[in-house]
Image (cartoon, rainbow, N blue to C red; front, side, top):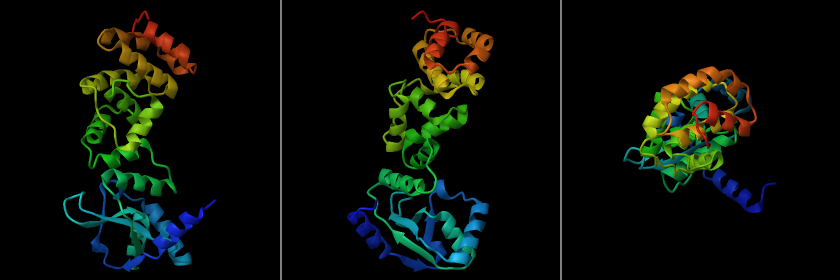
Length: 253
């Protein structure tokens, strides 16, 4: 149900709609420069049949490249559809407090059509925050999904739920000085267990973190080869963690 104040805010925003055919005045952030050609074609058909029913959402900021620029943060497909038809761009400029506020508003706007993944958040925040940039570097290097990699980078200090919230908040920090070495080692296991149940993989990572510095890496990889089919078939995460501790990493506790 739409509340009265929310309706007032929406109407106030609609009154701020501007129009422009000066396409060059608009800039795009790295995260939304890539567009889907098929989606643009469908949107062009919709525009021809129904017209335009919403504006492009923009911000004017200086913190992206040091000068005041108008950036499209939602509606890049609409923008390119209108430009291809040589039509005016309806747009509104919303206020953002800082880089984190901008990314969070981008996520809210995009969630209305398709939910952002953790990778979307990483890609957005890495434009401005060093730890997210390093996280994505490790992700590309070792092909480990963001949440598991974030767990390695914080040495298991976050649960999967709080770790997810941490990434989305813009407050993620790499606190583990051995993060790259551990990511490289875990990648050897991850390549083998990739098709296992996601919670089994989560518990495998937790055991790996506990075993770090005490286990024999090559022996553990050999152990995994012997038991890989059992692990991939598991769904009982409690049993999986006990099995992995004993049979892969030779932990007694």
